[in-house]
Length: 68
Image 1: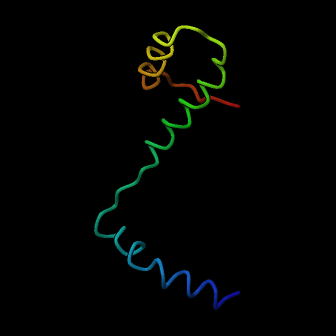
Image 2 (image 1 turned 180 degrees about the vertical axis):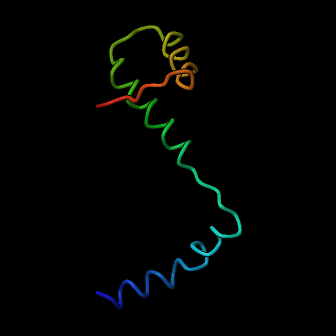
């Protein structure tokens, strides 16, 4: 198991070390995508795509977390 971990670490070493040169994360983007997917699930059956668009654009103005 330790040998497998070592091989995986060696395989991804370049990407792991690149973090120290360019500390870029896609966490905010992934969080926004998750909120949009949750909202779409909750809005299943709504017929107005314009309303959904307005809700998506308003995501950044909310301070609550979507739970579901």
